[in-house]
Length: 359
Image (tube, rainbow, N blue to C red):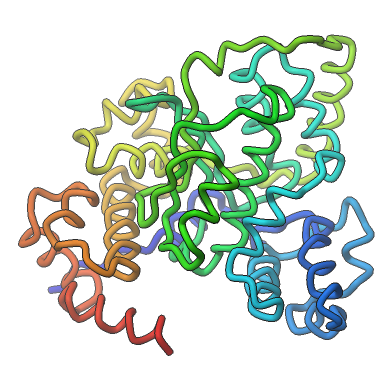
């Protein structure tokens, strides 16, 4: 009998126990709508196709479904004829458009504290994402991840977000600052040099997670001037906004991100993941059980996500390398697992996805 494995979206719904879909602040669509208007296209009917309207962009507290937000951004890029629209707009985004979150970033005592604060309070702006600072092999990984099965369907949002985060860091560190590396889950559409010109760092595609890699020494960099009086006010405001949203992500979502980051680099065990989350193994398993998710299912779902992403967008990667990236010993093990998930072989799935990409 084929193994019935829930996809990552299903696990996310179990973990959050949310009755409504993830939502995002609608005014963040403004740069995409303006890009459409600058091409002489009326943005109103485009917004309407995604259950949105121009008035949504004028309300700083209005939230719209994340799925509609993502679909609008992707169509905007198609209409403008710029496959790197999100990347470009993210690099151009003004810090005032992030309001209190930008103040949190610029008034924290160190860059590490700023990024941690940004992660903790980012849900006041958007649901359905995870953003996390974690220790990596060559530097600290600042990971951005949407809770959707296929990251390539949200290329514009992901590139926009990482470019914007890089810009926010430069406000603290100076405009000459650059990360060590930048990784994207999806494949490249624009020229690689376009990405590297914005990030000023090597950029890698078809990776297990989307992230900016930051030097450890940069995290300890202190701000030149601090206004400590602002911090309690900012935290109080963001706390009120977050409380009003409620629907916080559960431990399963946090554990899934740790698992994804570990796949292909080290063994993924309950002990390793619990330690990353500051929990005992027993506490992690108990809290996962409370959310209706098992650790085993989380690992399988993340392996499936990585395998499908790499198979769907890789042009030349061998099955063995994809298997290792997904945490399997070799291609044969991955093939058996993949058939149990989808009923087809990895090679068949890869061919099907290539046909979809080429139209």
